[in-house]
Image 1 (cartoon, rainbow, N blue to C red):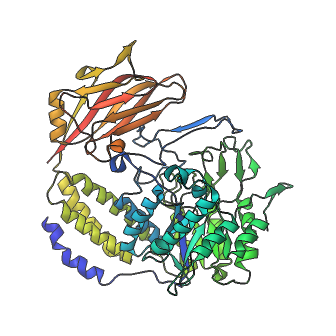
Image 2: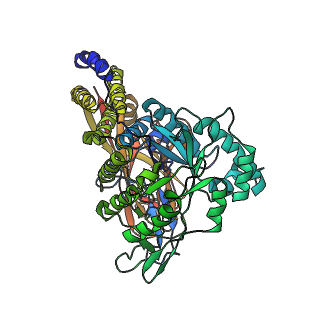
Image 3: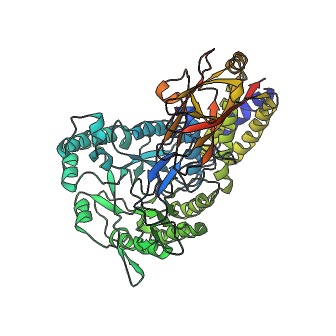
Length: 600
């Protein structure tokens, strides 16, 4: 602990002399897709898991099943994604994870995130508020990508039955817009371009005449600047002689322009049918298709005369591979090949040819792992897309980049999680947390050299403490626990449920020690079954935290292995009462538990 106290003064002096990126006022924003959760932090998984039947696909794939509770042999979770996050499975509501993403994006030259948002009280509004709270600490901007289609589905009616027709939904949309003005667009973390707030209007909900009613009902007051609105324009286009032909005009986008919205690109059209090169996908697009898709934006928006309150935005994306969702239930597999980063680089090059006419750049996306167009660091792609972002952000915003900046937030995040793991074991954990807070502040201010030196010192101190932690391992097979339920041919029928009760010694050990573990079992892969593993818990809400894992079956008829994590923080082990409950329309066998118990 003396080592930590010895450099407090050094930290204070360092923070007085930060190095920050200079710029020209242009902005870069990235779409943020959510919400993703974890069992440890939230008791659920959100977008990390996905199951859908895909019989309508022209490919041979008839269903997709991603059981994110399943831990594979390499220690990764079976997530709904083409690429695996560098930091693994994390919760979008975890402040440490939000900090890591914000500081990494900021280091790459990104000014803010636009949260995909539909209405209140959708779960994405919780994400929005969590993101704003963390962003405020680090001079990062948070806006919205308004997916108002969510409001015009039946989602809002399930919450408020009285909002059942389009007229009622339009009136409620006006209330949502007032909320956005008050809480997002004029907030401390508002995204500002040319001095005015801006948001992306994804659409899919209100018609132009209905949105006109919203704008007439809600007007900025107190001399506040009128928000600039970017309107998604992603018409499909077609092939002619093997060459992609983009849509260059349309009555719908003209109507939105008449409301003051500026046509802005989204994921480019995929019009080529899957072939021998891409047999696992229904449709795909080439790099040349993508660049041709941008031509109407360049010609009719970027280089056109500027209208009042107009913000002109370029657009880039790294590629697309939606095998994680197959079109969100539409049974369509899409691919836009990243080509080892070439596509993303060429899109930036294309936009930079018009950079003098552009006010901002919009990236789709920061973290849509499910559709496979994320630029966040992954195991497969590393920091490639962020390095490209930094390179062109420096050109667009006119600053000198610092190459070491990108990887420091990851190191901070690792130390945050080390301290979180030590928290139940040592009384002095707060000193480590305070030091890491200082590192985060340094990173936000651009003091990268100082942050790195501090991280090294703090990491050494944390490692010293970790070496004092003692680990004891024990395991239980079916003979070591009491299982109650119907059995048949050395397997348990989980249809009516079965319970697992641990012995007295195991209960004492688990209730008196900080622990983590795994439950392993085999299950018969029958069609269309959901197998739940639940536990006793003291955490609230219990209806979330009592779920240890969920396994969806695919109908292969095989016995498959499952391995789910047991978080000691979430699970209560009552004496002489069941600790675990398994229920689902299948059979299970060879159940076992393995634990690591930590003391210091």
